[in-house]
Structures are given as C-alpha cells and as structure tokens.
Length: 68
Length: 250
Image (cartoon, rainbow over all chains, first blue to last red; front, side, top):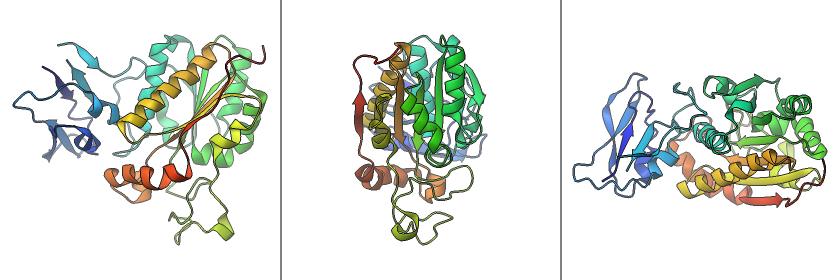
C-alpha cells in the first residue's frame, strides 16, 4: 500500500506527473488553488499506487511526497 | 507508511517563482539532494547567476552569494581560494555562462579551480524575455530572432560541455537532460559525482543540464518536454565527456 501527498497550493498544474504515472492515477482538477493554477490530485480508489516515485522525480515544484 | 521521497533538507518550503513546467525546480532538488547526501549543507556556499535562478537564495538553506552577470565562476574562484574548506557551487544559465560569462567559465575551467558549476541550458535567455542565446538552435524563433536563428548571421549553437572537456584543467564534464524520469536520475548521479569531485579536492567539475523553458519556447510543458528529446538531444548529445580518476594538482 503506497500513496502520494500533493501540496495543493504549490502545484502549478504543469501536468508532467500526469504523463509519467504508469497507472494514470493523477488527474488535473477544474478548480484552482491559491496561486491560480489548476492543481492535480491523486485519484486512487482501488489502491493501485505502487510508490514508484516517478511523479515526484519529474515534479518541478517538489510538491509531491511519496509514502510506502 | 514511511516517506520514501520527500523534499531535501537543503531546500526550504518556499513556493518557487518558476513558470509551470520549468526545469529549474528539478535541478534545485537534485543539487539539494547532493548537499544532503554528502552532508555538506552547513559549509556550502552557492553562487547565484543573473537569470531566472537569481532568486535561489529564497529556496536554499545554505548561503548564497549573488554574482554580477556571467561572473559566478570568478566569484567562486575567490571564495574557494580564500576558504578552501568551503564547498562552492556556481549555478548558471546559458545566457549567463555561454554568452556574457564565457571568459570567466573558460578560464576558471582552464585553471582547474576546485569548484562545481551547474549549467542550466534551455537554449534561450529566460528572465529577460526570451532573447536568442549562444545555445539557441538553428531555426529557433526567439524575440531577437523572429524568423529563426540564421546560420549566416548568428552562427552555430555553442556546445559548452564538449568545449570545456578539451581543457586540461577540468576534472569532470557531463551533459544530461531534464525530461524523462530516467534522464533525471542520470542527471542526479552526475551532479552527485560533480560534488564528490569537489569534496575529494579533485578539481573543476561541470554538469550541463538541458531543461525546458515553456514560456519562452511558446509551448505547453508537455510539448517542451518532447522538444528536448526531438530537437535538443540530437544537437547536444548526452553523456559524461571527461572524468579524471586522480587529481593532477594540490
């Protein structure tokens, strides 16, 4: 069981993490955060996240933390 | 659950001012991880350039000194010679290093100063508004080359890593790309090696990183990541160009 924590107000919605997630678990929200960007969230109801850290590796704003 | 990936201690919690998709944040993280790994944060001084990374003192938990445009290698030389116990790294962009500060970087490399230079190459002047840099690719449109870089009037893009690898003074010269996770992990390894060189007094280490500038390229972050693979890497080949096994001075 692994998961990620995305700091909502640091995200700038560049969606690079969306492209690298092998299971496509990260999606961009329509709502905006404090900075005015459409942030991304983890949508993982079935617990498929493996904690591979690829999203955190490409995140330019270092707002993803991975737990395993 | 235990955290398996979190922000390095060398960086603070400030929100970075970089544009969405900019590679600077990743490079900051990699440098921060290197400072954490070698446990040198309390004796490290960074030299900030004039460019987008000019505000990096807001993000690093170590001391940062601001150098005039293009002169971080000269400032780093002075600091390293007066305080050899400190770890000094210069962080520069391509307008800063390859254009205005070309003399400083070449001579610092040729003297073999025991400093680390991180060179962020996004083929454009970022902060000043997307002007043509020496590394701008042929045909690339910028605000000062609206019809694309022209070979006859502007010459060829300059390959800094290859150029510095020919100098006897350099100890470690590499180029990596900040696009795919695999390339980012290779870049991480190279930056670690560059700092290791300095910790072991091996001499001048230089890591060039190809990064994106979605704003000045006029692309989305996805398209600019694709451009690194399709246009930048064919002209700026990746790899380690030079790696000395033993120091040749002291």
